[in-house]
Image (cartoon, rainbow, N blue to C red; front, side, top):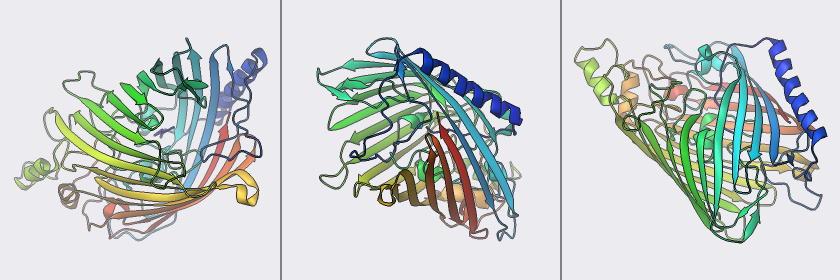
Length: 476
């Protein structure tokens, strides 16, 4: 699950009420309906997959119904760091701490053997460091940049999923929040439409996509240069068509774009704004005879985006006191990019992953973050070797860059929706992240980690920054 949340802190009673409500619903349904065998607890002889988790309750499909939930708390801080100047979107240079929370209730109903309806309700709160400003690769994937959204529960996802069978052969499928089917045709066409997160299905990686149990940095858990369609919370409306067979698959998505950068309201007129997403995946990795995946991504956004060079020219002509990428009449411009996503099992317990991303960099960063090129990679290890089979650990790095027009815009005093120090001594933003997630009991997990950021927001004059992290997660 990919979420972006930040809200004013909710009263403790709100959190307790939601947790109790989730537990009550799950307990009541568990008592009322028979359960399928617990698929989250493999036998001792089975390898533990990189993304496998224990849960508080047995996940069940009773009378075609799926219910599950999760709770995620993240606490981060950073000490004072060197910064001779700061701007409106800078990471604050004095000591600060911040916490975020996300509570999600997942539900699914199988209408038939080939059609299901999926819906998620979510409640989020807290904030990110410096209100989630000042880092292009921000440190907490659960935090967003708009505290005015409030703390009321909201509908995160609502989608219909239909499977067209193209072969009689069936393969096992692990039921979960995004699909409740326990088996699927080996060759099939999937159709999804409704509300979802673009990165629920695009640029997915088994060891580098889950901020609840794995890495937390935006540029590590996702392709930083992928300016995917999303509102402020990370969701959009659209349709995805996906073809899958044993050796490879291909998916295409058409999604709505927000009306302004990092905005909540989408434009429903596809002639004015839309996003096309393409991904080709090969069900094998670079190394022979070991599990792996290769995914090739492409996307094109059409939206009311500014052009960095035009904003610079307006400033140099004296029309603006500072470069302002938002100072233009409504216009539909185009942003495009590509990405490569690799994952490769090195041993039964150790998996590597890597990403490369690039976008044209001339058009305004609009929906995700301000990265025009990125390299990222790392290792993830499960704890079987030290007899902690549901523990996991990871180390990763990311190196982010900007286009020439984008960096000049910032150097002249411009700001985007996440970075802007007032001036810029440019250098690549570099991030190293480590974590250890310990399985405490059933679906309860605790994590500790640290991130080290050099040249925050691409500025050699500021930092480096050390960000220690604590995380508590419950899989219901």
